[in-house]
Amino acid sequence: MATLVFKPTDNVYISEYYPDQNYAGSSYLYCGQFSGSGDIYRSLLHFDLSSIPASCTINEAKLKLYIFWNTTPAVSRHINVFSALGSFSQDTVTWANQPLIGDSPESSITVDSQLNTYVEFDVVNMVRGWYTGSIPNNGIVMTGLETDNAMVGFISKYFNNSSYWPLLEVSYVKGVNIEYPVETVTTSTDWVGSTAIPLGPRTMSFAVVNTGPNDAAVGMEISPDGLTWMWVAFLITSGVIILAALPPSGYTGDSSIVFNTSGYTGAYVRISYTCRTGYGPTTLDIYPTATEV
Image (cartoon, rainbow, N blue to C red):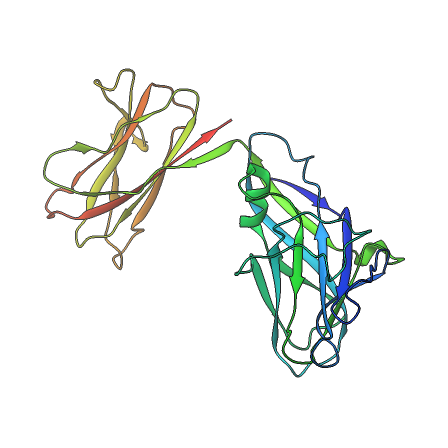
């Protein structure tokens, strides 16, 4: 898994008390109410993600901000990250012309006594949306407590020591993950196959979870045409293929297992399942995922 660290292309704060004032170039970013009603501050940031390679899957994304000022450490409050619904420029944005935000934040953390430390926001869903284009990358708007005096101050990219600047860390893997609907099946005394999925050049993985009361036997099969199926060895002992035994939750052994098609070729793949010898029916949840490289 690769990680890229981005510094903001834009970062600036805005003030309700001075609604037409622009604060571009400030070393600091503020969130929350400072001194009574009508004196609220917000901060805006934008990151350029164009250097993330094409056809990748975003696994993690963390926004990191360094707190240098905390006016009311005794007050526990949320700092919220909203996706901006319109574009802005750090050189012209003010409270009066700030972009709109949605009803719900993309991420929130609780701040109380933190000071002189980085805090982290999990923004993976928002960054995935930016990357895929499902969420326009207009940047973010950060809000604090706006009903009581409890301002928080962060270091901006214009601070004279870059060790404290805002950061967006994005971890990704090459390839696009496709998650299929969960398939719930019930075992019987016969071997039965799950829904066949086209394989081709992709890598497929299947997480199988025993959610019922009895043991099951499960395996993975590959087919060249969707009609003729061949076992994929899970474990080979003395030349004999041993299929995986899957006990129910709460019993000795792991009630889940993951199969992967890496190293195997075929047109189709599926999971086969049956009651384990001497046991009754049970239910299995099958989670297929494809990785397109």
